[in-house]
Amino acid sequence: MSTGADSAREGPRIIVLCIGNPDRGDDAVGRAVARALRALLADVEIIEEEGEATRVLARLDGADAAYIVDACVSGAEPGDIRRFDASAGPLPRAAFGASTHGFGLAEALELARALGALPSRCVVYAIEGGTFEIGAPMSPAVAAAVDIVAGRLRTDILGK
Image (cartoon, rainbow, N blue to C red; front, side, top):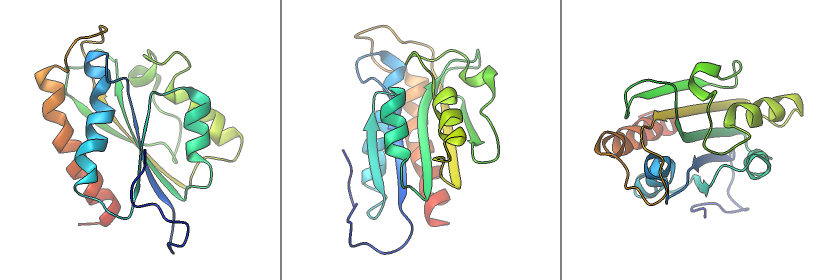
């Protein structure tokens, strides 16, 4: 799903790719950020995906700037937020070594880099998850990070 995208729109193509499975506890956090962002950003494509690598690569195609939100598992406290500039270099394995999506986000971005398809600006917001069981609700600590990340993305994209 995307909003605000229009082929006649001038200027750079900016996407926010929000990754997650809404039925797996804290893995839903990316999708929740997408919903929060729709109220804050009008002229940005906000895309929801489950994180399958070829879909991630396809979504990056033609973007001038990409902002990505995903749950991660690194051993930090649930709800911890980290921001990485993926255009400057690979994502740290400690944060993205264990993916809930199989072929992980780190590998997908490195493949995009190798193919010359990584946008010149690519920022990843990683929200530490703790619960990923099927049917589980999002934990309170992770749910609290949703509005924080949405606000930070708004500032990153609009500069205010």
